[in-house]
Each structure stands twice: as structure tokens, then as C-alpha cells.
Length: 109
Image 1: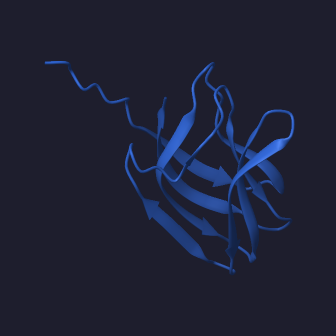
Image 2: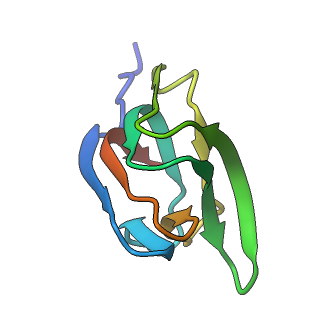
């Protein structure tokens, strides 16, 4: 009987306090970053963009958030929220004056 080996679940603190692009998870050569759950809070109203970057941003998700808004997703390895292209980092792009804080769980696949 073959073994069903699951990738290691990793955790990342989201402390995206700069205006513009903030790297949340660094790129891993030849691996996709598959986000399986997250909990995010913003300090101001605005459109938060989750993206990877292969020279130009590849938008993975957009959230229109009210001031002090919160959003969460609880998926699993087989039902992820989104994933980067292979070899790309995971970024959060903040509008001016907005910070995004929280945490996420991901696997490298």
C-alpha cells in the first residue's frame, strides 16, 4: 500500500505595514506556495491585493476592506485559498495608509 505523504504545513506571520508590496512568504525554487488558511485584519479602508510576482504581479485575490475589517478562510491542502506560480514569493499589496496584519498557513508544493 503506498504511503500518502502530505507536505509540511508552515505558518507565516502577516505584518504588512508598508504602503505597496510587502513580502509575506519568500520564494522557494521550483515550489508553489499554496495558502490553506488565513486570518487578516486591516487598519484602514482599502483594496488589499494578494499576489505573486513574475516580473509583473499575478493577482491571486483582492479584498475590499472597511477600516478595521477582518477576513478569514479555513481550507485545507486539497481546498486551498490560492497558490503562487512555482518559484514565486507571496506578497500583500497595501493601499497608502493601510496595514495588513494576521497570520496564514501554507504548504510548499
